[in-house]
Image (cartoon, rainbow, N blue to C red):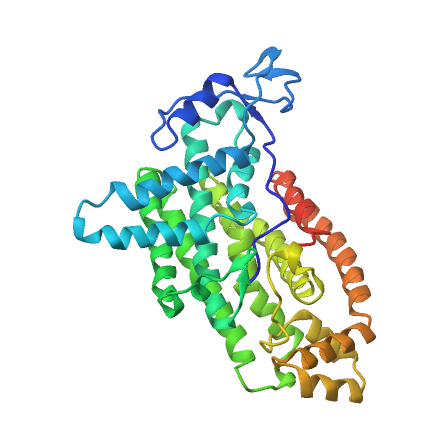
Length: 403
């Protein structure tokens, strides 16, 4: 499974009024449905126009700060407010521990892209405080989806670290109990969606979108697992066609399409054509992201990425291996067949040596440039009726990232 998306969170493209900011901070779970004044000025307080009135806009915390402030409130809601049975106290204490350890701590840009996209889709004068609040909640639901998928994936991949700390199942006393813990996180998604969005016209769209995206991701995970089963090294399985299918379903849908599609539904955009157009762009972006992730798994610095790469040891159908197999000599292929999927450091080093001799870093750099140009073309072709800034912001964050 891929690491957390992008290198930094979105900065807020707009600024809110001082009064609106105080209302949002004071009542993050149950804000009144009032119009939130959004000022088209900089966070430094440059002169701007707020709902048509010239003046100096007061600075408001950017979206990442608003987003982060929402998590403790949602955590309290999930673990304290709904259930009064004292017999469940230990269970909800465990849920709190699981959530705190696994949900925050990433770069949270999947979640942040919901509010970021909504700001592009809804005119500032029409964006209400309630809409902002719901976008933050849906964003955290996506972060929770990411967390439960990674918790399960780490077990399947025998991973050691995640986000700079031991994987949840690696902690003392956890082990395979982490499987049920991941299901607790998944179930919490739908509790929040029901509580906060049930009365909205887009509620069913969100439920179907989350369910379908989860299933698509699980299909991609199945392909990933059966293409490289443990103890069965067969590099002939690693084709570019199979690799792209795995990436599309395992990474691109939930990492790129889900956040933007959620914002589109929340903005009232239900047209199948517009969602199809967005999907064309976002799935292409997701493919590049996973290729980038594969590269960083091998050549990234764990101190920067927060994760020790294990694709070679896990016999993964990675982009590096697929591309290497296209250009290896018979001797190099023999080395890969003998060493790939082995866990000792010597064999891992020999695989990396082959990659270096094939100049895979340079090949990746060339691919990155070509992919960026191709993405610009897709945006020009398919984003005619959608704000291009949604897709350009994504692109700016993922290209040239180092973690």
